[in-house]
Length: 498
Image (cartoon, rainbow, N blue to C red; front, side, top):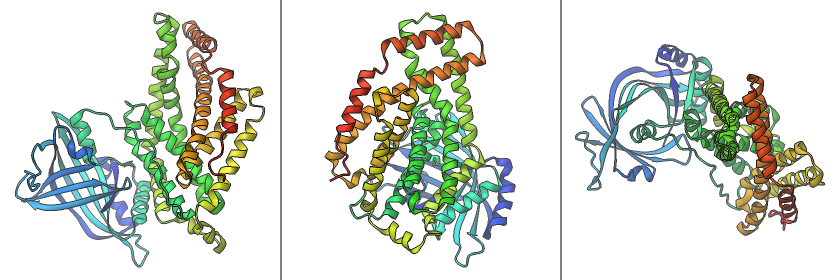
């Protein structure tokens, strides 16, 4: 199983990167350059890709090496098997029928090996491969300029820590996509896919510490797996799922804060809030353009104000995605992601834990889950007291409290009977869906206000009036529906109680 991380780097920054490696690590094998040409194979129906496999034949000098890789459990680990072959033609023991070359890569690799951290008596050995080249498929090209850090021996936490230290010294951007993933997308002319959260499945006796670690890793996987889609921007679900992952991450941190010393958690919470905030405008304008505005424009397709609203919203959406890309391309983003990944990998919460605290995190997670869910449930019910009389802002606070309860339920639901979980979850989901639609209209009114402030235009004003009037008259979310959903939720049995 190989464990590696990829970081995009500008070719002009490679000399600075080499110097930075020498400053923070001990180079034990100096840099050596070689040219690599690789060809990737699959069937026209992408049979191997659908099974999470890639098949590559690489030429280095006069040698040809065939490699099969499989998806690992996490973003940074994969299975890998190699064997020498005679040429670029793959040798699959009779299983190569239907295989054809899909794309190729031509790379100049500058490779060295370093020990990190240099001050420790047993540092990890890490290979750094700085790759400059191109991916070619179907007459199209995609440049490659990146550094791969692969763990030779030692601990994975050191790999993340080295990546973070280098990103503090040289402008680097975390890149979670393998060359093979980029090559297939180039060949198929397809956008990067969005990724929803994994369903967590915990054994009954899992400790709080192990459950916490798996929960945080799941949030990291969902967050970073959507990075390419969010940067690309063609699939609006990329930004949406990335924001969901970051909210789940903050929720997980809050769930476990009673057992972890505050300093690292406060920092991680603040940074995750910053990243999520940078994605907010892009997501808000996506919802406006895809959900809020279309039903009004279908009714009045020739309305000049609505067309002006549409064009202004598109410009604002583009600006929102620019803001998101700037944040995701920043060194601070990369350092945060790698530091958090390293902290989770090494179980950094143990630093500063008292003996009682250590015993607490080693107890079964079931000892803690019910109490946490109860606290979140009570807060949500208290926030929604006299629900029918609450104003829009108070209902928004109910929504926030219920979302925290839902995230906690998703983390812990495998510890409880599925039938009980489903009944409660259905009622919670219905309530949150209605409150979400109510919030979308509130957000839309704010977005229209921003457009009007940027351009004092009577045409835009007429479009805004038409939009608001339509949704108010059509009752996008009726008081009756909200009241019924709240009543159904209040009588739903909390699944964590006996």
